[in-house]
Image (cartoon, rainbow, N blue to C red; front, side):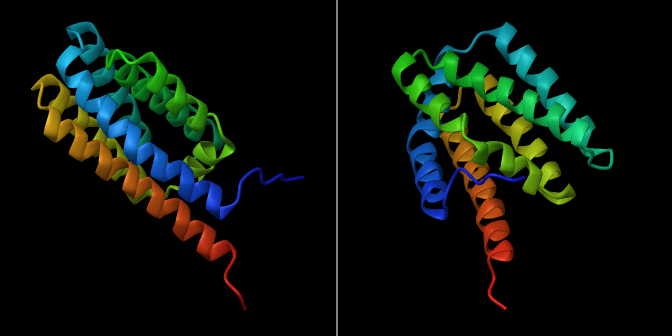
Length: 157
């Protein structure tokens, strides 16, 4: 049995809200994140890149999902805005986020892994504009993958 807990409108609204909140939090994190968090982000980015070197399996998708969740949670916590962090986390607890990872093909996973490294570089350089821009690109790419899959699965004919 498969239960779909969201609509296309829900997906669009979630990505719109993420685009408003998450780049802002990443930019703030660039000003506050510490060396230990940067080191952990690098390790998580390495883990995600390693996953891209193997054929996708449910176990690897789950490992990717967990590493990605921790990666983004570290960044948004470092922004020091608990209310926005909570709002963002509540959006990411939807089945849509998990579905996004299940949507990704090899190219999507590799692109996402490279973007994680670029986010870390921007944070390490304390470059607010770069951190915000790459996060925005990261979210837009995820949105495109989800909307493309939705279109494929709901194409008439």
